[in-house]
Length: 153
Image 1: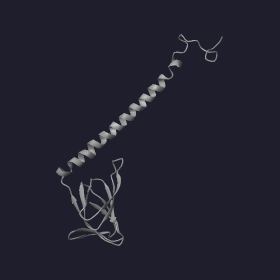
Image 2: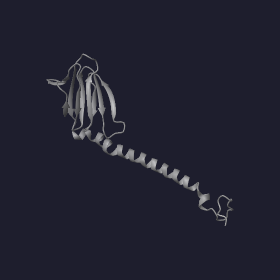
Image 3: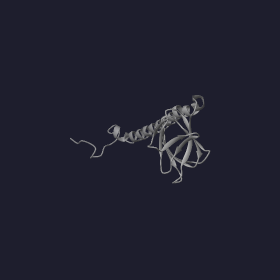
Image 4: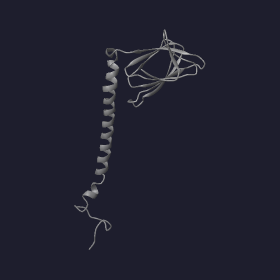
């Protein structure tokens, strides 16, 4: 867990403390779980490889949040002037595998399906547009041309 903050969090016997009027920024290298042990936290979670990857959460005492590897988390006390205490734990790979499968397989397959659907719609519009010009493609073959369409001698 990489932390970036000047004296915003301190280690204690029962977890970490974010002081009043402070914020903490975390970038976990492994799937982790954030658990608020005392107070309320305002958490902004940025998931870089997901289209709707930015979200705000308010967590109360005893509530937790799954933080995937590579995410950027910013946390501060919800109530100004009060400190916040939290625990941070790395989730074993066996527990994290469903989230990992969802993140690395299911989400890209949905994106691919969406992209293929858009490509098919674009191809259909292109085909409709080309077929709309068929009268110009067969001009002069059995159709009498107007004086503006023909080249008189």
